[in-house]
Length: 83
Image (tube, rainbow, N blue to C red):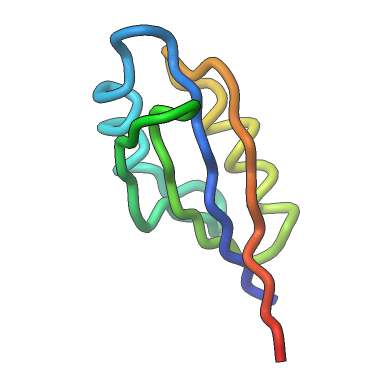
């Protein structure tokens, strides 16, 4: 089952652009960042991620995204399919 999520990222001061640039190149274990935007508000960057399953999404978050220099905190919002 494929999953899609939005990751809201808080960055260290002055690192939002650098973090966003790194995110654009992430393809990690059947998970890919498909869109990246810098935003205003309590978060600095929003990334859309698509993964083969929840385990691959989790690995991408912990091993690829949260290890980027400047990433302070992430909040993940999974999309839901409503009938």
